[in-house]
Length: 441
Image 1 (cartoon, rainbow, N blue to C red):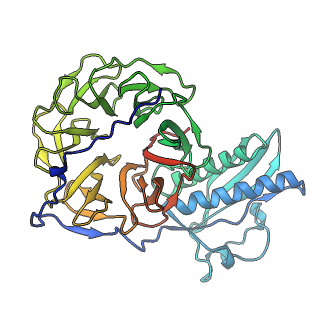
Image 2 (image 1 turned 60 degrees about the vertical axis):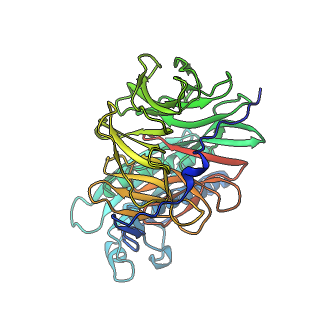
Image 3 (image 1 turned 90 degrees about the vertical axis):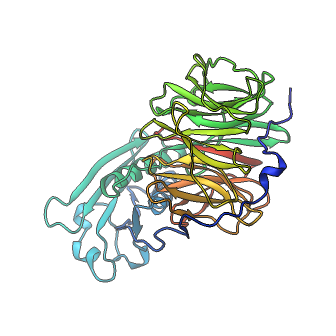
């Protein structure tokens, strides 16, 4: 049965824009124009003229280039500057060609692709700035001789390269959960690769699902569902759709968030007959405990992933929706943003040092901002492109995904924190509420 969607809405008076004097620094963009480590990436060559292998090699080469170009950790040297020739074996590499004034590469990745019980990619990564022991990576990757297999090998190699030279965990093998409405009034839980490929449904409830959240180990997704009347919190395995029990809280219950150790879930509920308040419980719903007690709506809790000792949330207690932080026991509540407007959807960075959020400041549109906990600085990373809301961090702390209405229909996008490399990840139906997994598939 299809039920009307629960949408958290503050009363109208809460949307009157605040007019406080600015106490925190607000800037636009971060590190624009910053250049990463320069990497040369000649195309990996198939070892035969087999048309199928050539097609798989084309897929592999495109995905590998796109993964590394989007990583935020390297700058790919344009292939128009490369020396002429094929570069699949060490004997075909002349170091001076790649370190010349025209190319100026710091690293070189090269290799070949062959058919061998599926497809096999032999890959090497060389540090061109050292005279000996240049090989940083030398590895063979294997998978099925399919387009999906070629994509998977490219993702694995991209992550291996970033791990060696980028100083961060690669994200090419991560996934993003989200809500997709492909039939009017029906919103199902979906999963896709980090680049928008391999999109598939995890639920077929013919109802409404909301607000997905990954467990820290990547084995479970908590979300809210109307299929039993609710909304109530449910938990599924993203691998085999196995359900896990979460005791029903009663009332309107939504917006789950996992603690960093995976033992607890914070959520919003009206179970006591009051406005929405923040509760925590064991990950199976037992031992519920109320954290907030006031006459305003408190929603969207998120744990500090580094310490587990703080929870950020959205509250209307000041008269407008604003973001607050409290200790995990519900004490020491303090407001995060003091410049007025409407601040919602807090999302803590993996290192616990920043919070991404959606902010409506003096306009009718929401944009994504990054708040630095230590300095109080707020950085705007979207601008003049519809409403941009519900940010979620990639595990590398370099990227965020978010929902945006910039095309007229809400879709999911991702971008690097400096405001570059904006990607539209979804196209079919209406797509909202992204949640980026912190673990590789």
